[in-house]
Image (cartoon, rainbow, N blue to C red; front, side, top):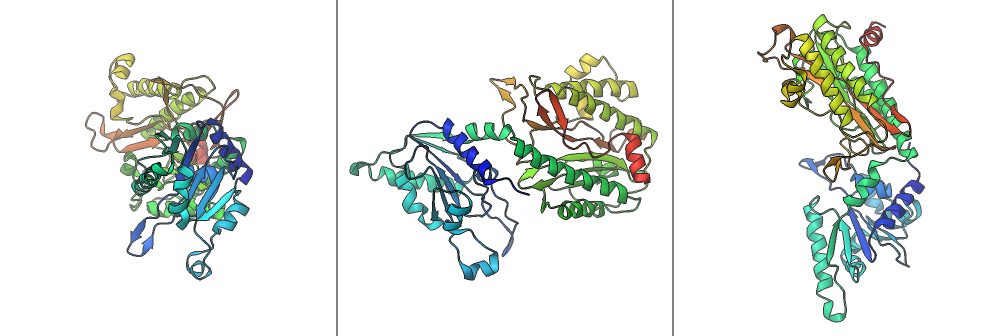
Length: 437
């Protein structure tokens, strides 16, 4: 399942319509990285590059020049090499880049040094992401200096640099209908994976066995990769926010926290569920779980156009603090506990983040130092949690070592919101029923 090339064409046109007169945008690919000796990590394209091109090969460069008569979209990429492709796979080559990826002009990547300075000559402003790739930054300065060296011959040197993300990331923040459909599919696959893990969990299993269930479902349904390293934390490990060792036995009576989502055509899902390995919540587990669920449901009701980005978090904190006081884990006045952030002993992260091509997606959270209002097409996670550390002496021993997080993916709609990840059960009754089946 992939987006149509017309989607990428529309994005390029939308970006160029915002660029300053007489400007150029330059976007390199991600860098291939070595895992060990002559083995590389699986290559994953830079999200900005892929967002504008749909081109997944490494060692390429995308150039946009609004209004250029010879063509506005130029792509540099690896040439076809039949002998090398036997070992490393097929390449599009410049001809394929023009034919299949709608490039107006395409050149071998080796031509970048000779062609790009001519493209820079006479331009006033360069849009790029400085600081993300030091090797590319050096190359870009080299190309600018090459133009500078030709000033006496009439060359005109660009004198302004602009952060490309200032324009591009605001575009990425608002998802199109096609993007939301892709994210819905990613959420559906991820939901099925969570359900599979719930059904197969049993006391004495290893965390990595449940991770295997997750990855199996991802790949079986068409996703090649998790969107991020899956978290499968049993018992006390659920209190470690980014636990990824996933190598411990899960004892009877323990909760399991699974934070996992697949990536589908570069779009991420991000879902967390917490459930008992033996299929039955203990009284303490149930009390804390239902409090987190109450906070999450309250936060989701705050997601609607015009509401502040921070509104879901504020509501979740109020619900959690009230519940912690009722359970005796906090003492004091609700307002003062919130002002003092006393809850951070048990809830130390925020209630969500943007979601899209990156699991922690791009886009500003504040505009002019104010929390930005939500708009249709934004996609965010809602993930309150409670984590009672095993060595927390401030609470009774019966609460210690319980970690809970419930996370869903939510898209802002014209009249409210839609939960993309709704197919994973999250009430106590529904979880216990699924596991019993």
